[in-house]
Length: 164
Image (cartoon, rainbow, N blue to C red; front, side):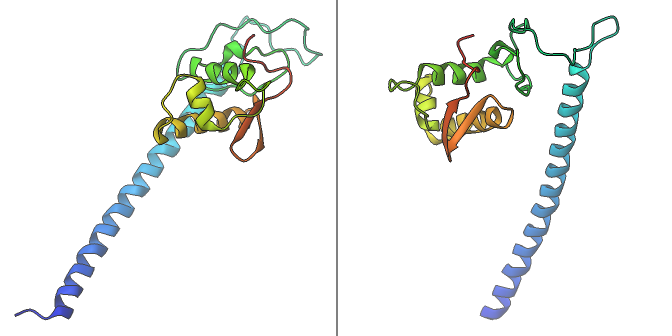
C-alpha cells in the first residue's frame, strides 16, 4: 500500500508540472498579445499620418468647424480627443456610450456607473456586459473623451457631447 506522503508528493509533482506548463502557455499568450498591441498601435500611427498629396495637419489654431471625418467602423481604434474632433469618429459602441451620457440617467446629465450605462445602451446588466462597458468607458477616459469623477462614475467632458 502506498504511503500517504508518497501520494501527496506525487500529486505535488503533477501540480508543479501543470503549473510549469500553464506558465509557459501564459508567457506565449502574453507575447502574442504584446505583438497585437504593437501592431494595432503601428497601424493607428500609419493611418494618422497624412498620405502623399494630402495636406498635413496644421499646427495653427483649430478651425471653429467640427472635423469632417467619416463615421468609424465597429472595432476601430479610439482616437485621442483633440479640438474640433467630432464624436462621429468613434465606433458605434463608443458613440452609444457618449449618447447615453449626453442624455443622462434622467437626472440632468449626472455621472453614471457602468451598470447604468449598460442598461442605457440596451444591454442586460449582467457582469459580462457591464465589464465590457467598463472597458470601453475606461478607454474613452484614457483618450480624453470622458471623465471619471469618482472610481466607476463616468460623465461627459464639456464640448464632447455624443449628440454631434
